[in-house]
Image (tube, rainbow, N blue to C red; front, side, top):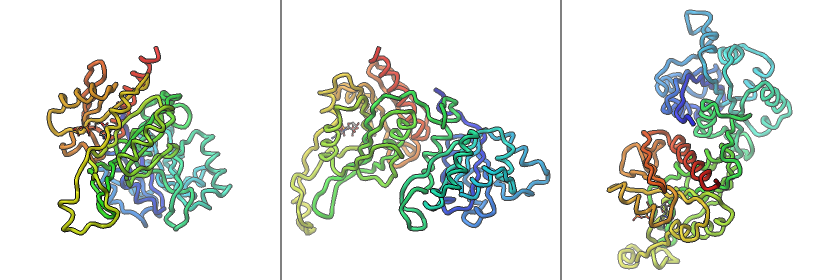
Length: 408
Ligand code: CTP
């Protein structure tokens, strides 16, 4: 599968508060290697500025129908575009395009293009549920437009409901699905259909007393990216995550846990029903032996905190593995290959992903990762630095190969 296919992406930003998320999306698309041309509608410019996008994309930003000295610019853009993303897509732009109205640069380009168009709706829940808006969405889908559905959550207007724009990482993934060319209907690849995948993500938090804890720098980005991509490729995904501020991908069953001991309980409870476990969580190796049920006084802290080891959850799974596939991560700062190979054997894994957590563009908290992947047959892959979504794709490609080999 082609992972890093790139092209010319027109990002149409319309006037909604979610326009701020379009800034991050433009950065993600650019970082991935797409050539991003941003069109801002007049209303969008009330929320975000052309300068923001030109800085983030290294390209000029189109703000009006008559910006250019040629009067056919809309046709040129429409023809050159490999893909158009409208994010956020207001009820207004959806309605206009659905009804053939082309009264500004963005709607004119959409009308004139033969490239696929992805709409990422963002609006108040009542607007989103309005039968007129739903009718317009259905009409556009019938004409082959893609929709990255909004999520449920707290909207800018304070109401809880459907209408929050999909996360930039999810939209990037939808764009890449279309570039990968391997899509069936609405941008969904289904090469992992039928597979039950458990992904663990994030750090764990080990309480010292009622106000203090021990943890690590993991944010959950890598695990969430794997869960998102596995779901997009048709797998049935269970995400078990330690404390993380990330929003779980839609359609993924998500269980939130706090400590290593909590994670172990949930992982073991659900192991039976799973085909593949991908253990991206940075599980704490130590936990305070006696958790105080009150806040310790600072004088007590030094002597009172005794640390014990947590159980190795993955090693435990390796002992009862059966015909399941186990994928581990190795967070290393030294002797990467030796340490990871030892973990692969000790924990009875099928594959291990080595993460150099001391590297600037890889490891905890970054959007990119540079990994090495060793499989059970001794094959070593060293892909270049890429977005975590891309690393997730590579891991899932290898999982699919291992699974097919097992099923033979
Ligand atoms: N892991 C686990 N339970 C633990 C510790 C780690 O399941 N208590 C899993 C991690 O999710 C990861 C793999 O084991 O997939 C390797 O974790 P890592 O932190 O790299 O290594 P450790 O085994 O903890 O060894 P060390 O910290 O000494 O490198």
